[in-house]
Image (cartoon, rainbow, N blue to C red; front, side, top):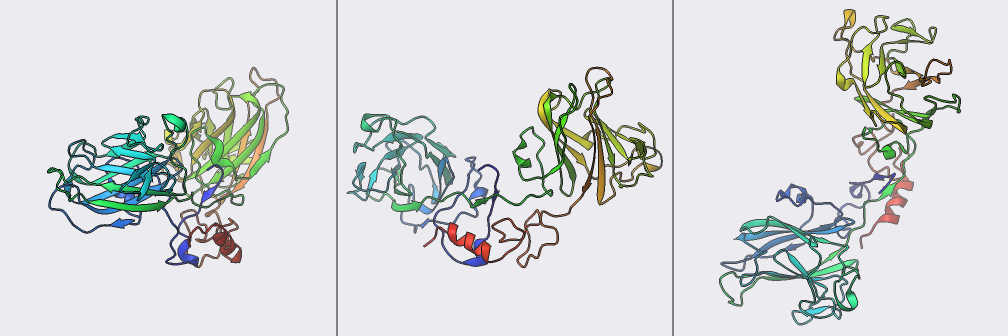
Length: 435
């Protein structure tokens, strides 16, 4: 969904009790049904049979790639058995009864037929016009008798024969189903049968939010989560070789300070001596404490070089190596044009009077960066000094009558401006898909 925020749980603020069609969710098919808890029941069916597949309730959800179905039975049975104890599932992928195989006297026009672990094309009107691709249908559990099951249908499934070869078989906004459960004691004419429809759900409302520096960044070499973090510094192209910084972004959450850096030309800003780049952090914004850096521009409590960090709070260059988890970097040990790192806000000293004492204590920190010229000391190292104010919320100080989410954004703030007002209501109305 790209550079956006998913807005959820806002319906109660404006339209309590309104139905909004299907449910957009991604379900893991693992036989653990916890991810179905918040999916509403679509069909409830009373107990009818004394044996076989007797459906109790059906839930349906979808995401961008799959349609998910949950079924609970009144008693243990195997709803994915083959002949002679088969249960059959007909899927009307365009919700048009006149197209596809006419199931149950034309109750649905089935494009897809499911039996066991297999799926078959029926779009041309035949009962079985060819087996669909493996993986079209996935089930869990499979081949056992139980009371709960889940399965998925690939929304991108295409036909395999005739005029439907290569064409999508699920094309409608509404999908209809016929479930025909087996009695599993011979054909007594008492099979449990369900006919129902499901309205496909759109993805949750996605909006670009205003720039913010309060954010949790995943240090994985994928820089998409930096999209709305404003630049803390933009540095012109200077050295003719070595590490030449371009854009620096800084963010924080309650636990970490995050730093993003792009370079004018590919380089490696985390190498060791003699090609080292050094990062000095004044954790209390006090030039009189820590090691004096760049002629007293700041007093550094800790220094980062390569993937390691070192205490400097007592004024020394290296007073002890800090824990390995103090710094995380990506990518590591490679030349590139973009990098990111996380620094533990709760790091403690390891030597002298600072053993067990926090090294980052101020509401403002100062970061001094000295890039290497690679190779040799040419006196052309790129140097930056950046002050950054740590913040405690994505919307610090915002009025939030209904509470805030995990990052401090007011619930119901649909346009990302840290307020809940009529503009948000207009956004809600525009994206409301209910009746």
